Length: 101
Image (tube, rainbow, N blue to C red; front, side, top):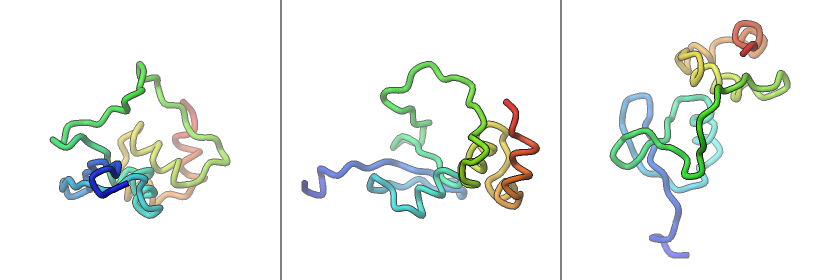
């Protein structure tokens, strides 16, 4: 597989800058994406939609035993809290405040 055959994706960071990265993302970048610090977008900056995505359903809260990163990402996506504010809360606080659908 040559450099032109690598799968890549476009991502926007908190500062609004968009750049291309190889997929799968390195662990630290995947964690940033999960928590909402990065957003996957199309090359033109428009929202990215998974190719096999069907009608979106209301996202349910993660399981209580899911990682804090999953809870942070859920709260950022669904409830609009900033990643920094969600990260500052404990996992138990996130579950208590946002754990019901």
